Image 1 (cartoon, rainbow, N blue to C red):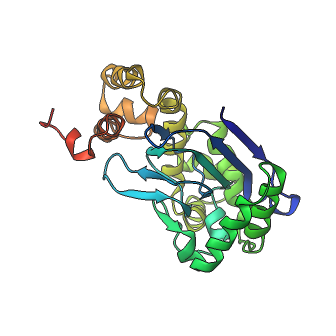
Image 2: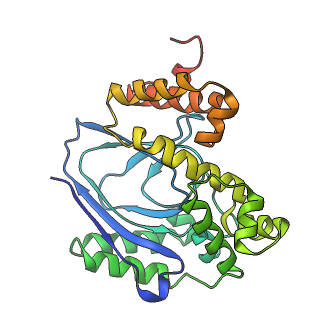
Length: 280
């Protein structure tokens, strides 16, 4: 039985942390599970308390051990492969969460091992402490203590906060000029402040939001379901023009096809290169 829990952050962290989470799922060493991680415009922190899985980019084929790491906002889906028992605890941050942790690199589509962010000893001790705590509030409290000790205030937070709310309420279907008008700042100021705190421009963030709403429901199904890939083909084939496809999904039809083919390859245990045109 899978156990999953979300825990609200302490009041003093609510400007920076969406929630803390934890999951435990049984599994055998011979059983391979794959899950599609959908971009939602949020960076995060994940710490494996059992055998870590593997996070893979379905387009580039780049892979990271899903051990103890910070990751920035993703601009495309990743595939998580797991064998054996899955046991993780983590945090989902606000879009500007990486900036609030003091990192100059916003880690867009990138992963930073916790041992490199802090030091190997700190990362190992934290994981050991979390393993020894009960599933639930005690684990969330310890991780919140760790995160809270590293959070710092960021400038112009209110501008980005309002912009994110406007973009998400419209499901990404607004121009940057419209977002700037709703927030009450100039186009150039919004772009500069938004990019500085999130690593993405407001236009690209809106594309992620559109992608999430348009594609997320399809990719969020069973990871090994052939029907998921068939549904993706259906959406792709029904796009009457590349311009309309990007308007609704936030990505070009060509980019979407590359992601789709990469996911198909990973779901069937092949390399991403196997999904390249002409390879069958």
